[in-house]
Structure formats: structure tokens, C-alpha cells
Image (cartoon, rainbow, N blue to C red):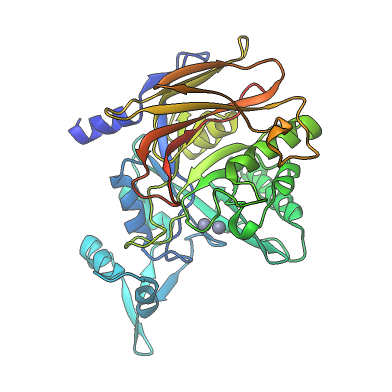
Length: 414
Ligand SMILES: [Zn+2]
Ligand SMILES: [Zn+2]
């Protein structure tokens, strides 16, 4: 095993899950489920993007272009590719040609203009995939709007060659989410392949409110962090940020609707790969699964066996239902310190005035300093979750003052 492979193994935190019945070894797999390429509005070739993630210690990647799967023959004019690259320096095409060369790189002339063929997923997958080491998931960003409000939903581990289509116009935000879920679940039922469906960046152009998302109860996942700088992660006066939306949704679901809470992902939503403000590597998920396959990853995430990260890596997170104890341990990095916040919502919370600090929704119940801590959930909590913040400022922040963080899933609600 190379030093590289060894360090990657260590990075993935090889461990035995105490709660699984058979002593089945499980690993933490690192992946990003939201990325754009030249197949829609990204500015690089799929092979270059997948290669970037593989070289940066990820175990899986999903390219999720808008309303399209990389399954057709697609030629793109070279001048359009070059125009999309706003930064100076070597062009995306030159870098692509230098890395992959002829005959892999295919060009043709149409009406005196050079075009480049974008590779299909089945063509580029074999360049990167190997069992247990790296996986490319087929995905798309199902891109809709309701009265001008964007409603973007990622479908990940999509089977077949046809995208799940955008819904017809004229629907409300909640109807769009429900209809998209219905279509994805129908495809899942038909093929037997589990599809992860997550609601993206709710605050992008203030498209999706907590109330919209809470009431679309079939949806179980959303982005608590998205690395695009224009998605209003922190909210603004009178509009909750992504984390506050999470607690509002889960308060409404658990108290009023008696349905399961949302789980939170972190993603990149990267479009730019040659510098710029929307570059890769900002947000990802760590999934605890027995094997690196699309089906295992989606099933693990449905169980809540994952956390979201913008830089903090956990050694483990576990919940013991009989004692209502949530335990978190951080993979401690030398020279850094960590703050662990326990956040929850009281059963007696007031859903009628959700923006007030004293309504019992998204309350900080404690703060610990150090790489490891436990929290016993009081009986009157609907759920609790942990947020771990490093002392290290984010090396490539998507908003001012960002520190590296991890977000664990709500527990104690079953
Ligand atoms: Zn989007
Ligand atoms: Zn996107």
C-alpha cells in the first residue's frame, strides 16, 4: 500500500461500528453530491472535475448538471468553452488536452468552428472507478421555478439514461418538491435502485421557505451548507439562515406534522475550476457505510449514518437511544481547538412565532471545548444535533468569517 493510500485510509477513519448487529466493518466515505460541468453551466470537462476530486481525497463524486444526464452525444463549440472561463491563465481546453491527449480528446470542425465532444458518464467512469476506492455516481440537478422562485433538487444515484424531468410550470414550491419526490420514487420503485433526493440551497434567491420545506414531508434531505457564495447561507434580517431553517423545519415536522425530520448535507455546488468565487472543496458529506456502492451510500444516508462537513472530520458520532446520549469525537488536528454546540428544540416550542429567540426552536443547550464530548438529551426535547466548529478559518471561504465546521444529524426523535 502506498503512503498515499495509507494516509487516505487514515483520513477515512477506518473503524468498527458498535451498533451494527453483525460485526461488519464499516468505513467513512467522503463525497460531494452537487457539482457542475460543461454538460450544463460549469466551466470544465467532466474528466478534469472527477480527477480533481479523486486527487483531493474524496471517495465518491456526483456530477449534477441542470436537467441533464451525461448520456447523449454532445459537442460543444470551443469558443463557448473558452468564454465560460472568466479567469486568465491556461485555458480549460489546453489543460484538458495536456492531461488526456489525443485520441481521448475529440474535436471536429462545423461551419469553420472547432467543437469538442463532452464524454458520456459511461466513457469517463472507467478512468477513475475502482471497487472500494473510488466511485462516480450518476446525478442531476432537477431545476424548476415557482413564480420566479428557484426550486433546485438533486437526484443522486439515478438509474438509466433519461433524466427525471423538471415538472410542468404553474406549481407552488411545495408542489414542485412533492411532484419531484413522486417521480424519483416511481423510478426507484421501477428499477429497485435507491435515489437520494436533496433539496438544494433553500435561500438561493430566497426561493424555498422553512414552511415550504417542512410540509413537503416526503423530502428527507436538504443542504445545510452549500459552497456557492450566492446562496445566503447565513440568511439576513427577518430571513433565517440554513441552519435556522433546519431547526424550523424539524420543529414543524416533529411537533405538528408527526413526520420524520430532515437530514442535512454539505456540498460544493462548484461551477468554476480555474479560480473564481465558486471553486470545489468547500463542503462534503462523510457517510458511514459497509461498502462503497451507490446503493450502500444512499441507504446509509437514509438511516442518518452520515454528517456534513466544511472542514472538520469526526472520529465518530453515535447515539445511544436508551440513555438518550449523543456522543461526538473529532479527529483532532495538531494546533487546532474545537467547540461543540448541542442544539435542539423543545417539545413545548412555539410554532406560531418561530423567528423569536425564546420560542424553544434551535436552542443551544450547551457548549463544550475539546475534541470529544457527550450530551444527554433532556426528556422535553424533540431532537438534538451537534455542530462542531474548528479554530481554523476556512481556507477557501464561501462567506465572510467562515470557520471549518461539521454538522451531525438530528437524533432522539424516533
Ligand atoms: Zn441550484
Ligand atoms: Zn447547482
